[in-house]
Length: 307
Image 1 (cartoon, rainbow, N blue to C red):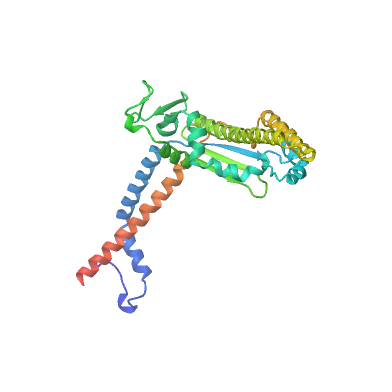
Image 2: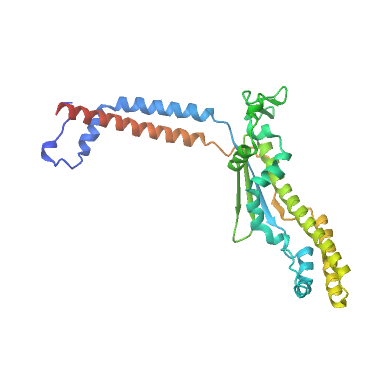
């Protein structure tokens, strides 16, 4: 420690002598280099151990609010209000509701889970690009028997839902109304497949929901028609029935009921993560900082012991 050229007697104790610090770091540069090299190698090994993650992005447009269904509702809106009946909102007006619906457990359990191969979501270890083959975690899923290693390892719907949520991101552009769905997976094929399933099942869910509501309304209106003798009321009910019949027809005719694709999902050739270069750089910087802290800490600790 006597090799350090310090002018500590000429400065106040609460001041930092940067010249002294530089001397300490320079004299212990090999310790710093060793620690930095260790962290650099460790971060390199860690980054290489991470599997590639691919993402599939869908850009969606809400179905036009001025479609046939919405227009029919507008035409009979006044008549419905006279009869004291409120009409449901149009498909295009359900964008915000649909975006939130995608994120719910019930949607995953009822619409997504029955349409996917669960090991593809919960037991994938990696994807072999050369053979286009999914490699499963042998501790969880036996690929030869196509079964889980143990019944206790079968993930619950709630646990699967948590994994599903982490792999998916849904966002809505408030200015344009466009909705973006990004799905990440170790296999670009599964990422694309999941994106398509989400959109298709969402459209199907609302199509079926509105169809059932329209059919229930028709049954109710027919019963009301049979019970009334007033010509004016019958005219109103007949107009509403005509609208409901038209609505059910258009529900079946529209392939994309809530959302249509502006840019459909694709099988991406380039991974989205991890950024191995970034991991290595940050690991090296961390090693450098820790090396300097170790050297300075050791110096001031020894100095305190000697004093």
